[in-house]
Structure formats: structure tokens, C-alpha cells
Image (cartoon, rainbow, N blue to C red; front, side, top):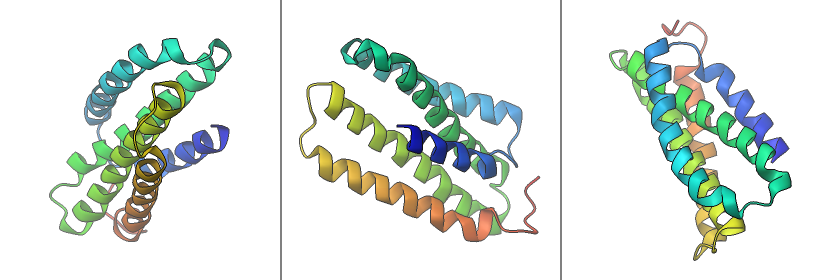
Length: 144
């Protein structure tokens, strides 16, 4: 949990620039609704000593994915940045999906084919984010 939290913090840094605060707040609100629904159903099944670490992780995951999504709107007219920025946002969605599946499998009633689904979505998330680096995060890009 800690190493994944640190990784998401590292992803947040390059995803922050280039989006407006309204876009960041809107994307965060959208992800917070999804996270809130998951937590409302799942947190009662999580052992109490893990509540704070799980909540911290969910907050970081939500913000990371939201920052990636918020950049999409900001660079939509810049053809050199639009595609890689969308890849990063898709990576954020896939991380939320992967971690949600993992949590439901571990703390919920289990998820059919969980190891396969978690790993496929996790590696696709990493692939999307890695693919985004060549354009959206390159030096000299027009993102501010």
C-alpha cells in the first residue's frame, strides 16, 4: 500500500501542470463520487486498523487520476499534446479500476478472475502513463 501510494504521488507531480483549478476540482469531484461509493460499501468490511491507510491511499489515488483527467481538457486543442495526455488520463482510470477490483477482492466478497483482471488493468495503466511521457510531459511543450 505504501509503495503504491508513493508511486501515485510521483505520478501526480507531472500531471499537475497544465490544467485549470476548475478542471482539477471537477475531475476530483467526479472521482470522489466513485471513491465515496466504493468506500461506503467496502470500508465496513475493512479491518479498523487499516481504515486510515486505506482512506489516505484512496485520496491520493483520486487526486492522481483527477489531475491526469484535468489535463485533457486543458490541452484539447494542442494536437501534439492531446493524444499523450489522453493516454495518461486513461492510465488514471485504469489504476482506479485496478485498485477497486483489488480492494473488492481482498475485503469484499471476492471478484471472479481477480488476479487476471487486476494485473491486466494495472499493467495497462502503467503502459498508458509510460506512453504519455513522450509528448505531454516533454520539455518545450506548451502546457503551463
